[in-house]
Length: 288
Ligand SMILES: [Zn+2]
Ligand SMILES: [Zn+2]
Image (cartoon, rainbow, N blue to C red; front, side, top):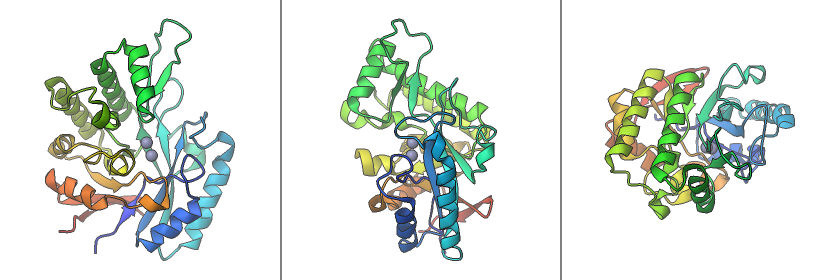
């Protein structure tokens, strides 16, 4: 029997809409075998959508309580979706050691620049926010050159997977999030495909697990999960293990578009998915 799992789950400890308890209850209703919580973190910092530094203990205690509550029915894990912002916060197990998380997801949400002229420009912008913020960031950081912004994003991805010690690579082409509306780059361009090829190769060498993330389909109306079909076929070429995650922020979307995620894996040539249980990664055949 196929064990349904999800390791990318937000709740009210960060920017989610439902409590951890509500998410767990929904996970059990949906028949999940493993539910992992992954609050946004940027230890030792935190913006309004991160777990606040003073709340780590409370978060871990609550997940531990739920672990006990669901024992024998559904395995519950305590993870973090940890930011990559070089110089400030890294998805690095040694950084989070004192919290003993069950796993870390490493994610690039921010593009930052150390060499900005003009102090009135914020040093960071997120590629996960509004279209205005994205366009504003490309304008102020890259003089409007979207190609440079996209290349910087993938350079960060590669640096993260090569240099940091974590478990799951979060939404590896999140930069696509607003491309459906904005068309600020062409995913078929040769330079873009080269970025994906280089990134897939780096991911393959790292030995890390990549996620199929259906959150862009449920939250941004994307026609396919992250990574894109072409990116997934490259990951297959480098034998990158995949796990399926919803990146859900509310009970309504806890396993949203999982069928599409499974189909995307199959279309890319995968016949198995990986899941983390009882402290180790295991594979299982994709259901037909
Ligand atoms: Zn994320
Ligand atoms: Zn997330």
